[in-house]
Image 1: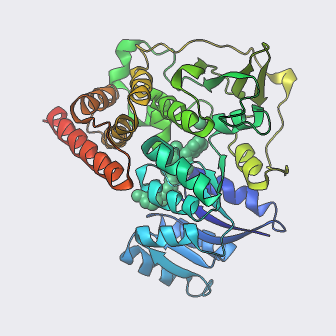
Image 2: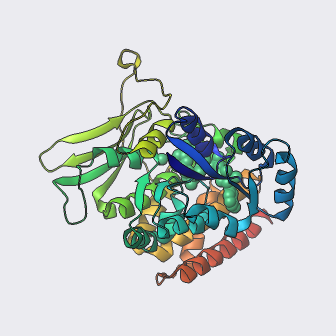
Length: 392
Ligand code: NAD
Ligand code: MG
């Protein structure tokens, strides 16, 4: 029986994880769940799964959750804050941690899980974008098992030869990272500045949280994923090619020196990579409808246009510049996307804020956790000041 902590249980990935878990009560037991401010949803999950711990944002949310739980789930202890998250990520009883908090807030608990040598199912790509070296070192030193949940990275992982490592490339030449192109792939460029948050969050193929939905529309998500892939598979940016494949059926590919290209296909449903990682190296039912090839339309592939997706180009440049730049661009983007979702800035302002923050605050000497957190803080401050100028 695998004992599981889900960080970010109330989010899109968290809910899909619980859906897979519920199909296999003989294999998985929920040890702990976290939800930030969606206390009512978290309470419902606790009443169903009866975890040992539940973690929320702060003391007042903790009191609210305790009151909701008292009659139905008195065995669940409520913790709060980063300390609570780090505790449930590293407690000795835990085997597996699903890291599905959105944004930089996921870094500390996910790193704790790696340092504690857990099986870490990584949805929170921001951990690698901010602290790739530190995170991968922690995984290695603690003997943690790191399995990618991001559908593209999970696909690449499935297409790589067994035993693939930096010293054993086994004929791998490059990785083809597929992207849907988001909802504005064919929108006239001059119409992009008037895009509303609701339009940006309406992804054509995937049902996701609002932040990653906006990132998919700007393709910053693909930029963050390219950085993530560099760390996960020890590649340089030049070994990764981004390919727009609007149907989102091929989730990514690996090209070998002999001309073979291996792809992983499936319906766009995150329960596939989640089930793959939960059961790895076995396979379990994920509740996903199989592909029906007779119903598939044409597959198309194009190169991304940086005039339409300047955030992708920015993230690739940051990846080439180093960790200070990737931490900075990630932080600026979180602030800019939040401002866009709150109606403070326009869709195309997201790029301007990100680029200007990167221009003005980058410090490439970012190695320790303290340096990373300071870099993140400064970039947020700078992005916030730039947004204030746009709003004025
Ligand atoms: P979401 O917004 O639906 O859920 C986010 C979760 O994080 C919620 O449980 C929320 O309570 C929690 N949370 C938010 N802010 C927090 C904070 N400050 N401290 C602690 N917890 C906090 O997001 P999502 O779409 O499920 O994405 C989660 C992660 O998975 C992201 O890193 C995203 O990039 C990645 N991811 C998501 C998908 C997808 O299909 N949704 C696909 C690939 C990767
Ligand atoms: Mg992805």
